[in-house]
Length: 555
Image (cartoon, rainbow, N blue to C red; front, side):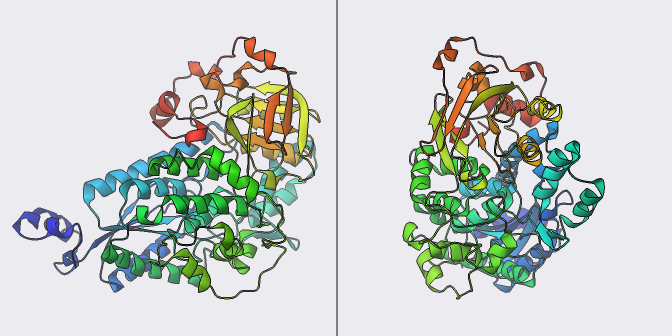
């Protein structure tokens, strides 16, 4: 078999390269095979990635079994939830860029014929998707699986429930320290991605939607033997993809990205998935077509079907029992591009036709004929406060709460907003405006979920809106509008707001406006963080952070 690296590994000219590999125990027989990279984001800093070495072992076996030579390297992993409400959360989105740059650098400098990406949590999945698009080698994704949900006194719960108790209920004396201690010990009972439709599981599901995993692979339990078998099968399959020269961009076509957007709406996925799909679309050269206007159009015609937290009471573990992502795609097959190629070498149409019959719990996965809502889980808003767009996760708020009008309370950082909540300065009807936290102004476009979790924990989630040029975690629920573009630091409309300005948010009309547009004759506020001396990647984001409506990319 001919493969790209072969000509560099044979003959006298290949002696240097063979010597390097022989230093690590590879043999002449190994070096006759296609070289398959395994990108492992294993680490001891977050549970989503903790079990990856077991998967890596099975992937190695699968590659060898099919006649390839596996070569593993690592990239960083992170858990954005660890620094919620703290300054370190500014590094959360930049992790995506670091992962993509890291993989791009290693693969270009070391030479491979194909790549297996092992991924799980928030920014690592989209970072690897960007890398796959940029490198355009035969590629397959192995999702590291879903954490089991916690249980306390017979009630299922997860980490987001603990967050709301700690950040909102505890300061008001609504929950005991003993209950929090008990929840703490049960919130994360296994490793894996937190079992709600946060950013981690949304992006794992969407990596299946775009066709880069084996069918049914994105929602498996992290501690299951089934996941180990899928890892080995993925090792087999990457060698076949190399043999057939099926590359990442043969799978990630424009039609496949359209499927990704459709399934984001069906899932009621994390708002972060919007900024990641936009970044991927720009990377692939589809930005003129697959943009916020397209996402808005898809939202209006695509139903939401998945009743998983924070959209409903169930967990991804329940979704998996009802067939998971592949079953959800079957429910809406009439809305999908079915002729797209997937990582198993078959079309999506073929995969859906060969799907095993499962018993679907219609409380967890609704049907196309009887959906949770007739429109998608995410809405794109526009208006004089967001001329370039803003995002609201309507599936994760109260559906009867379609409008909010109230006075602005202005905060130039999430820290100030959290302090105001702690001091009881937020009243029912208020619109909390957290600005200068966008890609450049943040810098890094931090996740300000701590603000929404506190609002929810205090019982204000039906009565207080939060709007921001920052991001929200996939854990977030309530009336929140994020990714407002242009951002305040780029002279966006939020920079002109003052306390008391009346803000109107209307979901049916998809609008977000300040009632008095005469405010734009004011002098814009200045970002107080401009005086801070940021270094490293935050400094790069301060200088080069792109707009949210283009994916908040670096550069």
